[in-house]
Amino acid sequence: MTKQEALFEYVLRKADDTLILGHRLSEWCGHGPVLEEDIALTNLALDLIGQATELYQYAAEVENKGRNEDDLAFLRLEREYKNVLLVEQTNGDFGKTIVRQFLFDHFQSLLYERLMNSADEQIAAIAEKSIKEVKYHLKHSSEWVIRLGDGTEESHNRVQESVTDLSRYIEELFYQDEVDEILIKEGIAADTASFKEEYYNNINAVLSEATLSLPEKMWQLDGGRKGVHSEHLGFLLAELQYMQRTYPGMEW
Amino acid sequence: MKDLNINELDRKFQEKIDNEIKIEPKDYMPEAYRKTLIRQISQHAHSEIVGQLPEGNWVTRAPNLRRKAVLLAKIQDEAGHGLYLYSAVETLGADREETIDDLHSGKAKYSSIFNYPSLTWADMGMIGWLVDGAAIMNQVPLCRCSYGPYARAMVRVCKEESFHQRQGYEIVTKLATGTPEQKEMAQESLNRWWWPALMMFGPSDADSKHTAQSMKWKIKRHTNDELRQQFVDVTVPQAELIGLKVPDPDLKWNEETGHYEFGEINWNEFWQVVEGYGPCNKERVDARRKAKEDGAWVREAANAYAEKRAKRKAS
Ligand SMILES: [Fe+2]
Ligand SMILES: [Fe+2]
Ligand SMILES: [Fe+2]
Image (tube, rainbow over all chains, first blue to last red; front, side):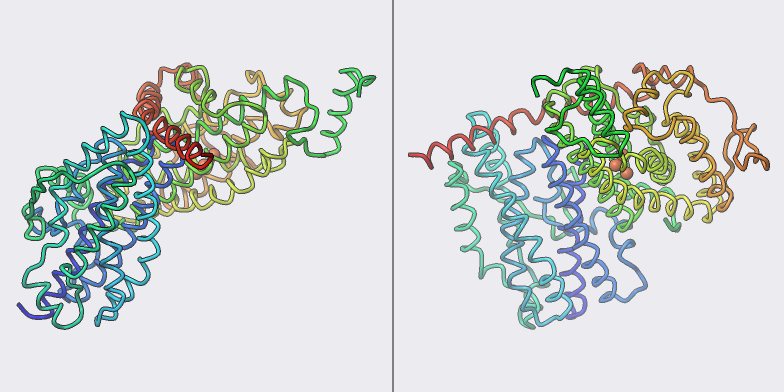
């Protein structure tokens, strides 16, 4: 694998994470539990789709095969999407959406803090531009985890169940392979192993304030980075790609 | 105050209105004025919120990244409009959640246009162009409404509505100047939305029960028919410019009056939708009710947590 190929793959993975999570959040639009949260979730969706757009633009540039950001976002096969499994999980109730967001935000925040110093100028610029948004997302999701965890008995039970269910997808956030190895050597990618402990400390601190906890036995799943997804992604893509597939080659 | 009887207060109130002095929340106002405003502003707020739904229907299917982001931002604006308007309702002593319950029980109305389905991507353009366009016609005069908080909310809202109208027209233009399939999609959508858009201005003046009083109170500045005419006059040339045909065989330009003449609205359809039996009335109210019910545990948790926190702070 050349450095260029690794870079394309790396940026694409991050782009897919943000697009798919942004898409999931956008499903809430008009259906939030209170008007203020309807607006907040849409805000998150907008930020993530904005980040995805910049990442896809850069990936397209790195690839240099005449594809643009929309071709990458809308016109690949399911196996070609490289997002982690966590982000494609269905919204469930508001608590599950928040827990999914919380687990992702803490990871993205630590990652982007490091990518701000990437040797790749574009990646550094995107991370720098996005970090403020990510910090806000992190604050929002952490506060809700605390409110729901330490709210009523019902809310506590609901979010604890989501924490337990979604904990299987945490380890995959730290997944690394040849792509990462090549780029870590170049100072382009961040070594996820270097902030894994900090990640667990951070989420555990919030969870304990929320009177919640990770399950004792942590199972783990992966496959997303290789394009082997859960059953949910196909349906998400069927909607996402509907227009581009039905009306090929048109401008909108 | 004691020796001012109610008639005297009412006279002074009307005098302020006649002199274009804004009425503020703490000022004296006749009960009927307050009630009319609560009804109108909460209906307007509900329209913003219910209006999120037909557009929300296409968020996950938007054709490219830019359109997806713009559509999301637009719907988010509408939710924001709902928020300001509910706040304006609260300045009149009404409770936001109670007015929302009236929406869910079918007691409160909202703009009937949102009871039509959004079936194609072109509908996203048509809603922005026609529906937000009609909303602007209705709302620009409301910036001068006699009730201060409503007038001020409208100034902010109108700025955003004109962005909505432009992005809608841009979507439609792109389709109308695109492939034959896209052009067909735009025309078919216009065929479905044109008449419901005209109905947005409400019953004809002869049948409008609130107009006269609302004009006297300067809540309203123009009659329904005046606004509808203005909308037709502005919108028909926009359709022609991009080669779309307004689906009205009676439409013609009248040189003498300087206005378009247009065909008769199907008032049966209008009343059917207003009474709750349009294509999506049930779906829209059900969706809002479901959001509230599904969110009940979240709101309870937030309140319980806030209480616990306050207690911990106090001790
Ligand atoms: Fe609006
Ligand atoms: Fe409006
Ligand atoms: Fe609007």
